[in-house]
Amino acid sequence: MNGEVLSFSLFSALAVGGAGLALFSKSAVRSAFALLASFLGVAGLYLVLGADFLAVTQILLYAGGILVLYLFGLMLVPPEGDEPRALRRPLALVVAVAPVAVLLIGFLSRPSHGARAVLAEPTETVKEIGLALLRPDGWLLPFEYASILLLAALVGAVHLARRSVSNEEAE
Image (cartoon, rainbow, N blue to C red):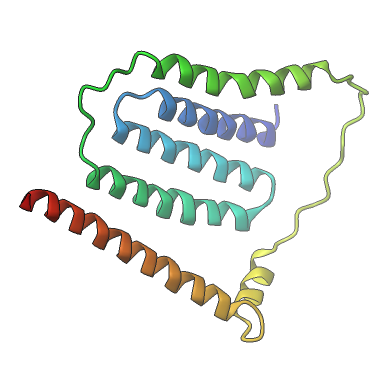
């Protein structure tokens, strides 16, 4: 077994295993860290496929940003009460297993022709994407506008969450 197959197997096991743990964990914080493992597994898969920009973007945006927002949401939302969870686990199992079963059936039922596809040698794209983003006549201004808009949305969400908590405490 060569290194690419081994690394692909390890990263795919990390991605699928982390997603399964995130789905079936009873603790929301454990689910968040299992989701982190899944995001890192997907970033590793991007690296194996030669998409270095997507791997770094996956780590920065999802493992960094989205997971931090998820943890902030956990901290701002009060814990659940004694809500019945009898139907949650079987429903989650069906939602997780059904797409995998459909994909496996489709993959196993297709005829194997014995020919393997040869992929082109990966090229570096990070430098070209970075230069395209930072060129003044390119995507620099829309990129900065999007970052300001996301920052304003985050500040507004924190403000609304703090106001609703203080209103509930006043009543």
